[in-house]
Length: 361
Image: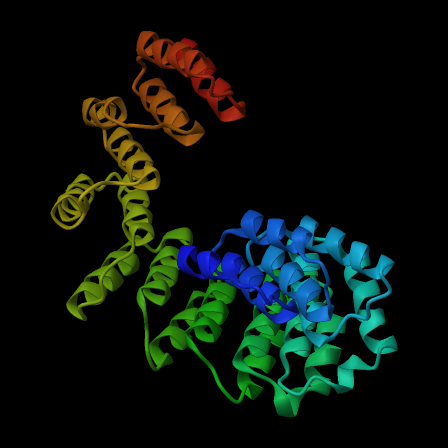
């Protein structure tokens, strides 16, 4: 961007296109503030300029700024286009404003832009928006209306929305009629069935999944653990490794949780050894999982060794150590960790106080 900016600054004949190109470039590079500074300097703006900036805010997670800029645009009586509404739909979803989302949809209809959705992006954004809100009747209305032009993203938004709202039968229906299914489609359905304890149905889908990635394997392993099927979870992990699928950090974290829940120290240590061989450094979630696993397996010293070498700690880290000491009847150590927690500025919660009370009783 530096070379482009240098060239832009020495241009004698800058027009709306060159200004907008620079703004869009900055936003794509994640330099939204720089893009907005240029936008404010623009001597003349058109709908493409406004939309580029609104989209830049949206795709970088500045949803409120995107919506405020749209309101400012309306003061200049500039009519939004399809691309403007696409960005605004995602911004409304990101902000979690159903009422504003419905008003936005109404403006789309009044402007007649729902018939100008040649590539299906507008309908996809509205489906995604309503799915995030959990307003699945509206989402399905748009989905059904554009069924012949539906994309895998629209289908996935419908499936995810139905799963999130507990409507598994409707999610399965959309899954069955989807012309194209990707890994997200399959994994969303598997996760949905696991969330309500229908492990057999989830396992059936998983076994029929044409191509499984690490996320799908981890979802199924996690589902087994959540439903206390620890042997099945371990067996599936071994199968995952046999098929040369590299586990995610989340995979290891789930299995460490299973090791702790069953006090299976051998499995916990094996996973710890795998981590040391494959990872240069552990993230916070893995460190917390190791602390919890060792504490539940009776090796409180090993748990504390990991805790004491952590570069940063969150509430879960402190609570895991406090509960670990508490379960082993080590009241003094529990209180020392609690004091250190307060000194660090981390605020305790109900789990923290439960550990303190248990240790002192």
